[in-house]
Length: 449
Ligand code: GDP
Ligand code: MG
Image (cartoon, rainbow, N blue to C red; front, side, top):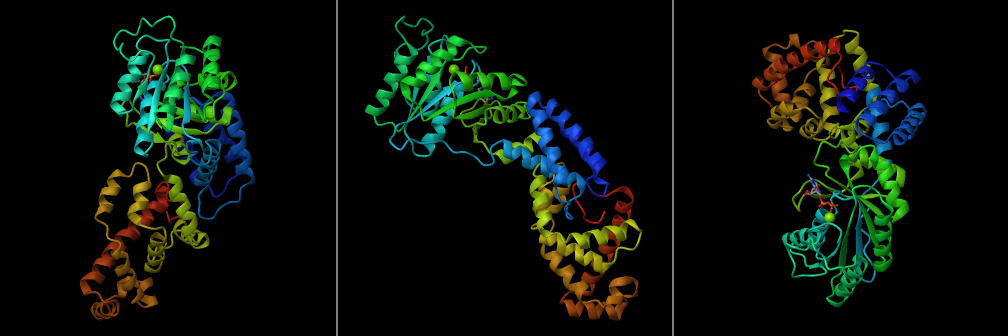
């Protein structure tokens, strides 16, 4: 996904503003990229249409290049569909809060039950796990193992029979077990009950009916639909079947540690309109996260925190000034010390320079170099340039020994500091000229170059 989008954006970044042709070409690529990420076809279609409409009607922002504007629109749209902000778990006014898990076999329900129990325990709750999957051999044992690891008690039909519960007593009924589990939680004052249910390999009527009966028996505050993030195009049909068959209040995406780019997240959220509450990211109980729509959007776009960077750029940049400077460079005019000063100030406005580079993807080496960067250096540079006359700023060559002493004195630095700055400026000037020729640093917007 990222490669494709990156090259699309590269094509855009040399152009001045968003034209309809640009937008259509980009939207086409975004559509293809999302399909590659296994976002369901109808979802991709409506998403692309929404992005196109917004791009066409958007104001051209002076601080962003066209590529960044499209990324921003795509990102905003993704975040909106994914629910905007994290939706926390709904807790019952009168405990216990009842959470029922539903989903296909292998989706990750039992694993999630343990993770969620551990998470809630960490917040001071006293969860009880209820083993209402009596379908699969060893399902009860699996939940007991998970419960033990999490340090959370498990209510199961036959507590003594670990290891051979593949032969369940004929009377064991998941609905009755759920009801008894809830009663036990009330009696023992557990404030949360997590009901683990059975799944099938595919959507089937009997499974849905059983889940429906469990739901009716325990009247849950939350029904969480657990879905494997790697499910691909089946996400929509599966989510729809559970939405119609059982009804759910929220979604948990599991196996997000795999190659899944999160296409399923977009599909499920878009088709069912239900929020994604949590993400499961591995086999360990601690591989569990509260779901953040904005981070998921970045993951789908695979662009690091580029968007944060863009927002900062939007805030800090005087677009006109940037444009003027870009024009100056493009026309081959010299980059002067005065320009250098303006640039330094703009960089400083963007917050910590180090942080900024840290947010760009693929900047590992740069990051290392910047670890040695001292922001006080910018103060020193600014002081030195301010102590120069306009003529000296335009033509640093004229700075001789006596001018250098005057500048050092005026800026509270030494002649060596002044020399160092002039050397560095010389280097920057050469780099600027080169960047003007080659099209600049990717992702740096309208910074000169
Ligand atoms: P259930 O049938 O819905 O209860 O699914 P399980 O909880 O039994 O999980 C099925 C398999 O997926 C097990 O082997 C789990 O260890 C594995 N699994 C569950 N969640 C995750 C996850 O987030 N990441 C990875 N890598 N594996 C997971
Ligand atoms: Mg299970």
